[in-house]
Image 1 (cartoon, helix red, strand yellow):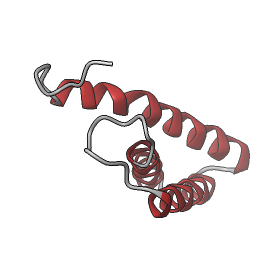
Image 2 (tube, helix red, strand yellow):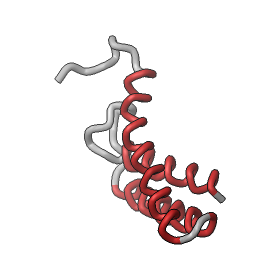
Image 3 (cartoon, one colour):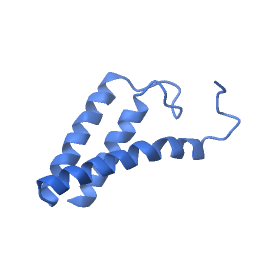
Image 4 (spheres, one colour):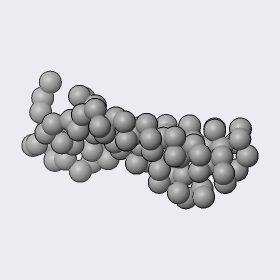
Length: 89
């Protein structure tokens, strides 16, 4: 259950990142359905972590996995996109 909770949390943060206007991986943000799917994946991650652990550790494990995904995704984007493709601000 813990592995599935991590996968659901990372999927939630990937969808949340890709639906943001500030994302740099896609040419256009995914939009509102991706935000809804991100919320559903986050709720699924919470349910999976609570099923695997007890309630309070499951909540904190979910929040930790969501924060790790939120911090890691911009760095992964930066790593995979060459400097020539990046748009200057």
